[in-house]
Structures are given as structure tokens and as C-alpha cells.
Length: 328
Length: 263
Image (cartoon, rainbow over all chains, first blue to last red):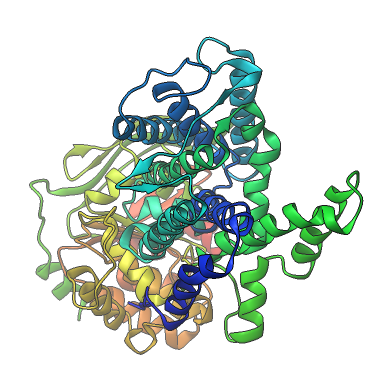
């Protein structure tokens, strides 16, 4: 059985550079670029597991992240005074459990479909959840959402401090990356790729294909939940605009431009997206900066349909004919 | 191994003397009747060939037995257990295996990974988050199977790089994973060279005696060399049953299947 080392020299060098980044960067680069990249990357990592390794393109990752974020506000504290004020560890665990149940149920619903229909059904869930949060005031406080969801102080480290928040996000991103990189070469991961390549054959080998797919949704939901919690701590707030159709598609864009063929694609895509999202406005007037964003993404997808990862492989690993994940 | 010797080596296992019993099995696709009242039994350890012209319903019959397209009427009993309404994966875990007319392999994975999945599919730990180790039971069995189907030298090769004949060999290796009790072979000789067909016949006749198989095969030389009994289908119905010699000499079978002549 072919194996790939999790901790390669490239991974160690990247980790050292990222750990040293706060020595050079200001608060903007640490939070708006660094932490935001890690958060987007964690959420997109779940989509890479689903789409790249499981063949299931879900647009509901941001909805799952949103439910975790809302749970932090509803069960914890917020400036509207509507929070239940539960202890922080209980709030975090509750948020992750609720979001995972939500994401798993989306999986139960969508594994009955394939291809374009999976995209449509998860888009319907994302749209439905967006309008529900916007129109429901009893639980989600409607259009306004919640503000004042402060990042906590843990063990003397104030996570509102950009440096510590950066490290918090880096740690979660690193663990998520290593966990998924390990998982995709585990028995479960190889089986999931088998399901992606030929679900009917997997059934004929004795695998319960739906159970494998739903488990993948559950794992992706845990990642989305972590991303959702970090997002509300970073922004201090959550409202329906954070989980609309636009943000849902942003996660797909991140995964596709990074490349679905390897977990690192999530973070490469997240970095490109975050940089373009922040600096496109400097290149062109305020009214047209979305055009620059669209053009950059179009360029990448046009010249490398399998994302930046595919580009890298063609340049430096010419023997690798495909950016598919299976042989990693 | 001679025909008689193979029969003597075999013995029923699992408590029932029949590996497979079909009772009035039917399958409709809308108004199209693909299978109609198919009833026959296969003894444990028997090797059965199913013949018929294209469109006779042979592959549909296999799909009904495995549950890919469950029957719309009738019953299927596997070693004494009614499996008519079981999910596909549960039938497989009871010892039913099949190969496909068109290779359904995992093209992005290696030979060993394909065999590993086949072994894992009928073992516990299908959801294991552990990475497969070269020395674990499933990996060891996968390598043994690769050698059994003469692909030991190509174990790490991507399946997409194998020849057609090698892919058919791999299909049989995957069907041999775990503890198969009944294997359904859907045209395993299709597209093989004469030399590969000879190798296939040897491989099938060399299968352990307790393994029952049912083979769909258009190459009569292959089908009649490896089978004890033959079932002929026509237009979704059972047409004739008999020994290879009886079927070879049956005028009606020759008319519908052999085009009026023997081979």
C-alpha cells in the first residue's frame, strides 16, 4: 500500500514560516489576511473532502458554519442581551454538535442525489437557511443578527489580540489539514474515493455507500463548525449576510481555484481568495472591483481546471497525469 | 483437473445443499418485461453456465440476484436464506460476489488498492481512520489475491495502465476477496486473446471446490469447459436446462442461440 509522509520537509518549512509570520506582520495582515485565510481554508477543507475525495459538491458548508456561529451567540453572550450565557466550553461543544447534526442531516438528504442534483439540493438548503435566519426573530434575531460575540481569554491569552488569534487559527488549520491528509489515505478515505469513482461497484464489494457518504458529511461539518466559531470571534458578529448564497459559493470558488486534488488546495485557494478580496479594490474603482475578482478566478480555472494544485503538479511532477486525489 | 475430479472435490457448505434458488423471479422496467418467472436452483459447489442471445435477460438476472436491480416479483434464496429484499452490500457480506460485463474497476487506484477495497468490503473496519499497513491482514490478503490472478508483479500499477485482459483478471481477483460462496461471472472472457482465454479456463477450473459459480459467457468453448450444467435463456424466460453435452446437441438451442450449427 502506497504511503505518503504527513510531515514532509515542505510542510515543516511552511509551518516555521507561518509561525514566524507575526514577527513581520501588522494586525491587518495577521487577522484580515492570515486568520481569514485559515478560517476559509478550514471550511473549504471540508468541501475538498466531500467533493475532491467523495464526489459530492455541497454548497451548504457555509450554512453549517453559520449555524455554529449563531449557536455561539444564542447559547453564549451577545450585545443584544439575547444570549443564554452558558459557560464557554459548553457553548463551544453545543455549537459543534448542533452544526454537525445539521450538516449530517444535509448529508442524509443529499446522498440520495448525485452530480448537479447534489449541488441543487445543497444550494436549496443554503438559500432556505439564509432566508430562515433573516426572517426569524425569535431565535436568529432576523436581519440584524447578533453582535458582541467576543473571542474569549483562555489561559491568560486574550484571543482578541491579533497575534494570539492568528496563532489560534493557525493551530486549528494545522490540525485540520493534518487530520484530513491522514484521513484520505486511511481505510475510510480510500473507500470514500472508491465511492467517488464507482459507487455501484463499492456496493458490490460490501460497502454501505450511503453510510460512507453521510460520514464524510459529518466530518466536513465538524470542520465547518470550527470555521464558523472562529469566524464569529474574528468578526465579533454574525448575521444572515455571512451565510447567504454569495458566501456559500465563495467556499466552492476557494476549493476549486486551490484544487480539489489535495487538502492543501483549500488553503492555497483561501489565500488567493482573501488577497484578491482585500486588494482588488486597490486596482480598480470601488464600483468594479468584483470584476477583478471574477477575472482572476476565471484566469485560474481557464488555464488550470484542476486549480493551482494541478498547475503545480504539471510544472513540478510531470509524471502525475491528474490532480485527482486517489494516488496521494 | 478433469471434469469428474472437480465434481468430487466439491462439497456443500453453509447448511443448505443449494447455493441459489430462484422462484418465479421477474423483473419489469416500466412495461418492458426483462425477466419472467425464472425458476432454477444451483447446488452448492456446482458450476453453472447461463447462455442466451443478446437481450435474453442474462445480465438482468445477475442484477436481480445481486440486488443492483431487485426483482419485481418472485423470491431469491441464497444458501437457505431469503435475500430477495436485502440491500446489495448485505448480500455481498453473506458471500455473494460478482464480476461485471464491462470492467467496473477504480481506475485512479492501484491494483493493490482495488484488491484492498475488495478485501475490506467484507471485513470489519470499513470506516477505520487508520492508514492501511503493508503487514495488516487486509493488505496481506490483497497481495495474495494479486498473485493468484497473476498480477503480483503489477500490484502497485494504476489500474488504468493494465491491459484489458489484466483488468478482467483483476475483476476475478476482487470477486475472490473475503470468503466467496457464490460468484456470478458476467462474460469474463469478453475481449480476451485465445491465450488469455486458456489461462482464464485454467483459473476458473482451479478455484477451490467449495466455491459455486454461475457464468454468463458467449464463448461456448469457455462456458462448456468450466460448467457442470447449463441454463439457456430466451426473451427473458428460461428456455432449457441440461448438461453441456445435452445443450450442445439440442436442436432448439442451436436454432435460437447457435444459428443452426454447432461449434
